[in-house]
Image (cartoon, rainbow, N blue to C red):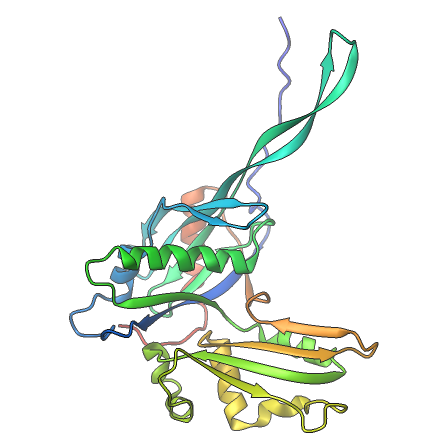
Length: 307
C-alpha cells in the first residue's frame, strides 16, 4: 500500500495582517429615452440587487482568457451594503514531471491545469463605493470591466431598462501627486467627464454648469503654451481644474496625463490603471471576510447623494 503524503492546508491568501483593496464607485446614468431617478424607480440598493447578477459568466482577455463569476451575495440586515465574492475559473497549460517505467526515465508532459482565484467585494448603499480585495492575480481594469458587464447585462434583462451602469476608479491623489513630482516636463492632462450624471449634479452644480452639454462624454484637455517648458504643475490651482480633480477623486471623472522624465523618457498616467487603494484586515471564514469588507466600505469617504 502506497503511503499518502500529507499536504499542508494553507490558509487563504487574504489571511495576513492587512490586504490591499481596489476602490471604485458604482455610477448610474439615465439612458436617453427616459428618467432614471423618477419617484417610481427603485432605491439604489434595490436596483443594485436586481441587476448585479450572480453566476452569470463574463470572459476577459483575448489570448489568455478568464471566465469570471460573482456569487455569495449577502445584504446587510440594515441594507447598508451588499457583499459577495468575485473570481475566475480558467484552464491553462502547465508542465508536469512523471516517471516513465517503460523507458525508465523522467519525462515532462504538458497538461491542462485548472486555475482559480477569488476575492470578497462589498458595495455601500449610501456612497455607492465598491471595494474589492486585491488578489495577487487581479488587475484593476479587469475587475471594473467584469462588474460593468454584469451590471449592464442585469439592467438589459429588466422589462424597462433605464440606466447605464459604470464602475469607475477613484483617483489616488497621493499617487498622482507622486507621478507629477517625478515628471520633469508635463505635456498634457486630460479630464474625461461622463454626463449627465444625476448623482454628481448636486455636489458639482457650478462645474456642471460649465460643462453644460448633453453629450455622452466631455473632455477637458490642458496643454502648455510652450511645449519645451511644459505645463505648470500648479494647474490644480485653477478653479475648473480643482473641480475636475475633486470629481476624479469621487470617480465622476477620470484623469490621464503624459509627460517626460529627467532622462527624457515618456511617462504616462491613467487613473483607470492606478486605482485608489485601501487596506483592510479580513478574517479567514469567507462570510466573515465579506462582512468585514462591508463594514470597511461604509466607513470610507466617497460622499454622494442617495436615492
